[in-house]
Each structure stands twice: as structure tokens, then as C-alpha cells.
Length: 113
Image 1: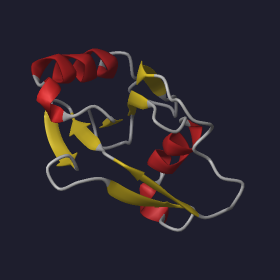
Image 2 (image 1 turned 90 degrees about the vertical axis):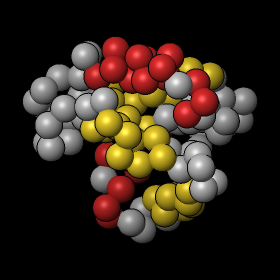
Image 3 (image 1 turned 180 degrees about the horizontal axis):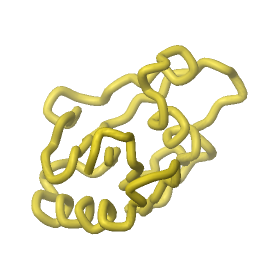
């Protein structure tokens, strides 16, 4: 399962524990996405009416308990939604979020927990 989060890693064990708790609710098969909002957004929907747009955000991705990607040390990451097919489900998830929202999101990507 993959987890994208707008929460800084300084939250430490509490953040990891929340991610692991969310992971336990993600089905091992199927395409269901599980989302826990950590902070509600203050703006409108992030999704643009354009087919291609950029989302600038921090991302922490877990594979099981291991962090496999963390943008916090180097700064926000630009996600090229609609232009970068490697984003896959992450593009759908970002499109569903509000501007300023922080969330933990889990889904099975077929590569195991």
C-alpha cells in the first residue's frame, strides 16, 4: 500500500502509527482507496477544469512501515497531473483533495503491503 501525506515527518511515531493504522484498513485486493483527513483544506477543490495541471505538495510514501519517498527534507514536490502517467492513483487522490488539505491516503498498488 502507498500513503501520501501532507504531514511533516517531525510528527514522528504518531504519524507512522496513524499510517500503519490506516494501512490495516486497506483491502488487500481491489481498487478501494481509504482516506483520513488530518486537516481540512481552506481553499476550493485542488482539481482544475484543465486536463493537465500542477499540484505542488509534500508527499511521504510508505511501503509497509518503510518510508520509500519523503519530500519534506528537500521541499515541496510538483506533481504533473494529467501529464505524468507514472502518478497513477496518486493523481486521482490529489484531484479529490482541497487546497491546503492534509491527509493520509492508502490503497493497494499490487506491490504488497
